Each structure stands twice: as C-alpha cells, then as structure tokens.
Length: 350
Ligand code: NAD
Ligand code: TYD
Figure 1 (cartoon, protein in one colour):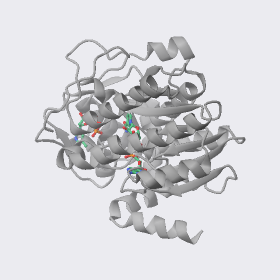
Figure 2 (tube, rainbow, N blue to C red):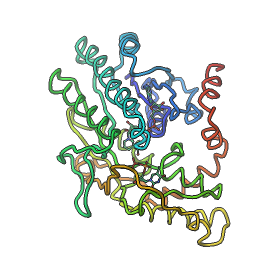
Figure 3 (cartoon, rainbow, N blue to C red):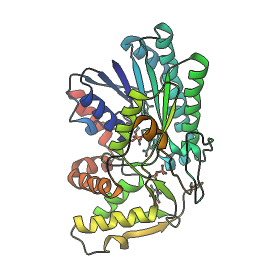
Figure 4 (tube, rainbow, N blue to C red):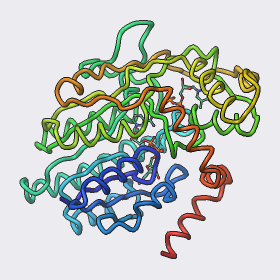
C-alpha cells in the first residue's frame, strides 16, 4: 500500500506519519507538505531515513502539481491533514484558509477521483482529518455527535466545514471511497507555540505573561496528540467507507483551569515556589466570535471500533511539559523566526 499523508511536517501530521512509518514497514509513506510556518521537518528526524518514508515538498493549492504527483505515484490511499489550523490567523487572513483548506482539499479530491476512476480496486480511500469546530459552539450542556448539524463560526471552522462538505459530495456524486473524522483540541509534543498550551509552556519557562482571552471560561475538550494518531490509524483501517467518526477524550476543561494546572505542574518542574507561575496569568481582550464550549461524544468510535484514549490529561500534560523542557533547541528554532529556511536548507543538503 502506498499512502500519501498530507501535512505530515505539522503537529498532528508528524505523529501520524511516525506511527504509520513505524507500525507498517510494508507500507510506503509519502509525506506531502509545503513547509509553511507550521511545518517543520525537525518533527520527523527519527524516521526520516526509514526506507518506507519519503518527504515530498509541495503545495496542495497547486492543482497541476497535485495531479502530476498522483498520476506518477499512483497512491492507494490518502490521509489528508494539510491545513491552515489557527483560528486567530483565520480572523486576520481568511482567504489563506479558503485557499489551503477548501481549494487544496478539492485539488486532492480531484486527483484521487482520477485514480479511483482509472482503477477502483487500486485506490482504496481518501481519509479527511477534520475538527469538532465545524459543529459550532455548545452551551453549558450537551455534546457534539456525528449527527450534530454544522454551524461554524470562525473563518477557520467555516473553511474546514466546507472541505468536509466537498469530501462527502465526492463520495455521493462520484462514489469516491472516503472517511472523515472530527477531533477535539489536541495538545502534546511538536505543537506550534502560538496555540494555548505550548504558548503558555513557553511563556512560563521564560517568566512571561500568560494571555487568557476574556475570563478564561471557554471550555475545550483536550486530547493527547498520540491518541489522535492512534484513533486515525484505527479509523483508517477499520471504518466503513463513507462514514464519519468523532474523536475526543471526554476531557472538558475551562481555559483558566488548564492554565492553572499547567502552572502547578511547572512550579514543580522548574523548582519554583508553589503559586509562582499563576501570578503570570493575564486576562486579555477576548477573541472575536469565541466559541464558548466544545465537547465531543466519541462513543461511536469506542463502540464500533474499540478505540479509547491511552492517557489522562494530567499524564499527557506532564509528558508534554517534559518534552518542551527537554527540546530547548526545537522551541528556540521555531520561535526564532528563520527556522523554516534553516530546515529547508538542512533537508536540501541530505
Ligand atoms: P499544523 O498547522 O500544525 O500543520 C499543518 C501542516 O500542513 C503544516 O506542516 C503545513 O506546512 C502544512 N500545510 C499547510 N498548508 C499547506 C499547503 N498549501 N500545501 C501543503 N502543506 C500545507 O496543523 P495541525 O494542528 O497538525 O492540524 C492538522 C489537521 O488536523 C488539520 O487539518 C486540522 O484542521 C485538523 N485538526 C487539528 C486539531 C488541533 O487541535 N490542532 C484538532 C482537530 C483537527
Ligand atoms: P487554541 O489553542 O487557539 O485552539 P482553538 O481556538 O482551535 O480551540 O485556543 C484554545 C482556547 O484557548 C480557545 O478557547 C482560545 C483560548 N486562548 C487563550 O485564551 N489565549 C491564547 O493566547 C490562545 C492562543 C488561545
């Protein structure tokens, strides 16, 4: 099986690539990534020399390039993660999100459709990785199920919702074998430090303010990134074609409670006085259109396919903090501003 994973140099994609390369030595894994600010080949140094792995630099928005690549490589399956992924960036630059998340996805669908048309037994599936944010926001009660209507509020979630609709449309119109999963907020190693948890880990380390939007009352349902990767593996191999699965950890936290827990963990790890890090918490202007609460009902995934998360939030956060404290170079490279060029040059030399 030759599998194309898109966005494999990013946060979640790198964990999926690593899992597939190590767990399936008889698969050939191609990682297609354009190395935007969020893509970083340093996330994959441990597997880059494996014989079943190849990095392909390229832009999913470039239709001609994508079409040529698919014709040449004749992939058997696609796991699509490449995206613009940060809500705050989507508020400043929505068009970028339309280009990558919508047009890029449709380019991949078109190329996959051609392979499927040519040989329906050879092209097995197009797996689209999406987010729970397409469902909109919850009040104090209830959970998102696979039947919840789409109601996106940010340009990011609107672009992901649009891409999900296109994926389903290609299944219904052209018979393309597809699977979609919608996952809750991830955290863990290799997370770009513009997102809440890695940003605060970095700021605590450097004794800088921890910016909490509004009153910190917004609720997110956090899942350790390696658990997301195992869920993707399970769904990729076991889900019925045409189906959708929600992925989540039944792990709801208000933002302020997440940051308080992080402060306590890091008080100990940095040998600071108990309560020292909490003094860094700063309430700042709220995000426009800030969704109040996300919560995922992942019972379909548990009941149908037997997947459950492997770590508690406290365990996962502990592992995550340790990773950031032991990967000083990774962190300083991605916060230095010129890391993308640095890693591209390094890669070109190999
Ligand atoms: P990320 O921003 O860390 O990584 C995205 C990757 O896509 C980067 O490596 C980037 O270089 C690549 N990319 C961007 N534009 C590209 C283009 N035009 N062509 C080729 N590659 C391109 O994102 P992430 O957090 O790892 O998210 C991965 C996927 O999972 C996304 O589709 C996202 O919507 C979804 N998701 C994320 C979360 C989360 O909490 N981070 C939760 C649920 C779903
Ligand atoms: P984020 O990590 O950006 O993920 P998403 O918006 O996709 O859920 O944000 C997680 C939560 O943390 C969200 O409610 C916004 C909030 N937040 C802050 O309070 N301060 C910050 O600096 C950031 C980046 C996010």
